[in-house]
Amino acid sequence: MTAITSSAASPRDYSLTGRDARLAVENGLAAAEWYHTEIPRKQMKELMQRSDQPAIRDTIIWLAAFVVSAAGGIWFWGGWWCVPFFFVYGTLYGSSTDSRWHECGHGTAFRTQWMNDVVYQLACFMIMRNPVTWRWSHARHHTDTIIVGRDPEIAVMRPPDLLRAVLNFFGILDTWHAMVDMVRNAAGIISPAEKTFIPEQEQPKAIRVARIWVAIYIATIALAFYLHSWLPLMLVGLPRLYGAWHHVMTGLLQHGGLAENVIDHRLNSRTVYMNPISRFVYWNMNYHVEHHMFPMVPYHALPKLHEMIKHDLPAPTPSILAGYREMIPAFLRQLRNEDYFLKRALPPTAKPYREELHNDNPVAAAAE
Amino acid sequence: MSDWVEACAAGDIDEEDVMRFDHAGRTFAIYRSPDDEYFATDGLCTHEKVHLADGLVMDDIIECPKHNGRFNYKTGDARGAPVCVNLKTYPVKVDAGKVLIQVG
Image 1 (cartoon, rainbow over the protein chains, first blue to last red):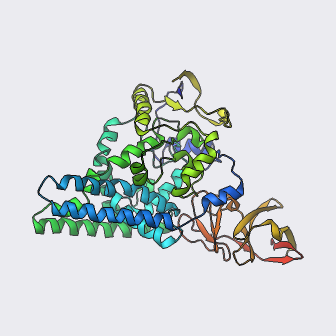
Image 2: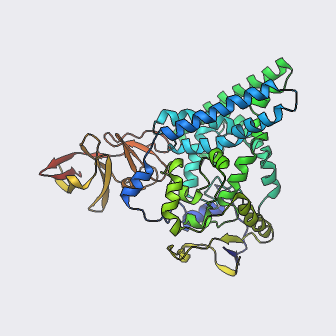
Image 3: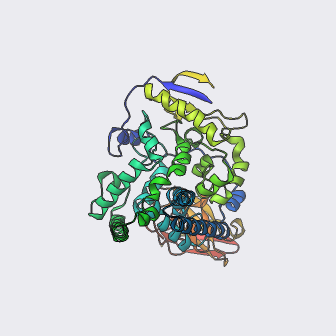
């Protein structure tokens, strides 16, 4: 791992309609051709093959865990024993839906498309991401990953807003913005930024979904008033706050502290080895370099893909803790110098980075 | 009416697979369906100009390798976000073990 700073000290403009959006297009960073490891077509076809079985198995376990944890939370409501049940329910609702939304949005989780669609809609509702808006924003994220002014899904912009990152572990700002967006969409308004990536013919669909969701939340709040109880909101809505911690913990690791404005996912994405429970919640998105390089590969084939191409990738981060140990100091350093980032070292077996394509202009580097 | 152009040998494409074919500055995708029929479309996804020949063929669907946009390669119909614009298709025939497409 090498830490790099740049002499170019110009504040970044992350707006999708601002200066850096225009510069990215002018500099050829928008919709560029990205580096990918060579894999023979026959092996790639095997990796891309779709199957319903792994996702059906995982979804049955997932839904059963929802039912059991919700039932326990309701049964023990009013006593301390409801806490562990709501902890599980909240993590499923506010975190595991992040990966279900993601995988089913790619259409890779199940072979059968309606199954992807059903889980996608359910997960989008729970994670509070408009299924139309986020399908298009995520397409842009894959086209222009961590390109300033182009990628609408940069979780930590520079200089990092660490208070925002901490608050998001409890879903606070994230959910507030999601609610504002939902109400705005329900009122029939598509923002200028959304218009940059949602085609015009798709925009009415985003509005229709937002209106349905607003109706569900109004009904839930009305039920809570009717019952004189927080319980309906503990089951619908609030778990997006008290269960967000896991998806934020894993999500920050995807790109946090790494390079911007490069066209090689080995430089801007992080693969992290994780425990089996986190991998179930996260549906193997810890293999994040692999996912970005080959988004056609289903979550259940990512460990195999990782084994196949790891000779060409930076060494994976060995644990979540190790990820935070390298990422937090990088964030703190970026508070003083926003051009600082972590440059991941490649093994001798890897094809080198194409330095001429990368916008780092290093003036200082220190091996860690 | 344009001439027929030889794209490849019939055996060059596996069943339920796709192959890239470049001709006269244009790029095409040639498909062999699971029931051993051949089809041809423009080679680039209508969403962001990615080569479809790197994608996945499932039944009568080609899925783009970049954003998983889906088309029916037999008709060219776009099958949902993030693809909205249909693919152009081309007539195909197999003659003496060769796959020919009409690139008009």
